Length: 385
Ligand code: HMG
Image 1: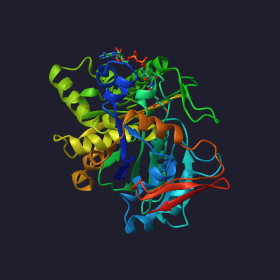
Image 2: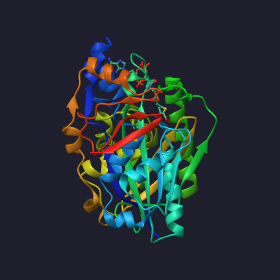
Image 3: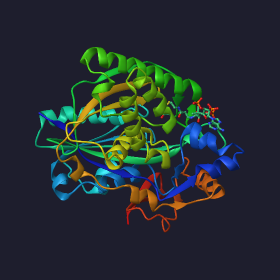
Image 4: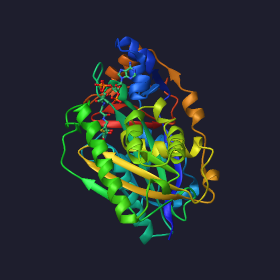
């Protein structure tokens, strides 16, 4: 049975800040952000968007009435949850108008959780081939103003419809994992910003990649030569490039150049959005599929998922015959955003909801289909516009 990603959707807010301007405001050489970090623009998420609305907006862009009849499992992976008890998936399923005879849940393991969701959904579809599962990674990356992590913020959601006989990517049974209890990045319950040991986290990411990729090659007999593209969780695009360089170091120059060119296509959306946390690896996949001109059905793609704390997984997928027909073009969504200057970005950053029990939000300037209108008596108020 071929099970995998049937459709891929993406949503980020309508606002962004230019990294060169942020660098200037922070009295940093712009090339540190543009080249050293590898980011050009950063999504700015207004208070009217949260993990629920980002997830709902991403999913609404791909699911049809026919899909809605078949979806009986909704998993939202996030580390930007809005409640310690009620799952983001419960809100999202209602906003999307999904059936009630379904399972909904939220998954957490930092940026890794969407991969866990995808693999769990694959098992579910193996047992129920006539059904579909909706897996969404939705997050807002926040480190704080004027912190070292600031240029690696961002936000958005990627939604994946998982089905038997998928249109886009058939997931292979070749996953290799590695887990350890590590304090590289964490978000204490009462904190609205993440805490991070930045350079340590970057080193651990590479160490985990080296471990799973070496074991993957031993267990499958495949090497980097067998992949048309290698895709990475991209907390910032330079981090993925460093991992790719490890993977291709022993290849001949032509193959190295080919994998570097596909990496270039895979980073186009992340470099103008920033870290999506759970959705980041799958934004790389979407960016590759929509921006590479050399992919063919049957090509093998390698996917490296990493979540701080820490969990890593490497696995592969095979491109399906009609994958091109199942894709949209998200360059338009990204091109039509509005730039905010650094002062406005700082104002928006500080106006995001903390732990308020009552607040009304101005939704008039947010063009998204689903928005957060405020909180009343500790109950979040979501609206479809
Ligand atoms: P920093 O201390 O500001 O930066 O922190 P730096 O001094 O290390 O410089 C960054 C790079 O810019 C360096 O390149 C410099 O050489 C270069 P590198 O040595 O890395 O190749 N540079 C320049 N290049 C060109 N022209 C210049 C120039 N100046 C300097 N003029 C750091 C950077 C990423 C650590 C920080 O932003 C941070 O802490 N970010 C958050 C943590 C993070 O993203 N970690 C990634 C791995 S962990 C992960 O992926 C999980 C995560 O997504 C969370 C989850 O799982 O939920 C984060």
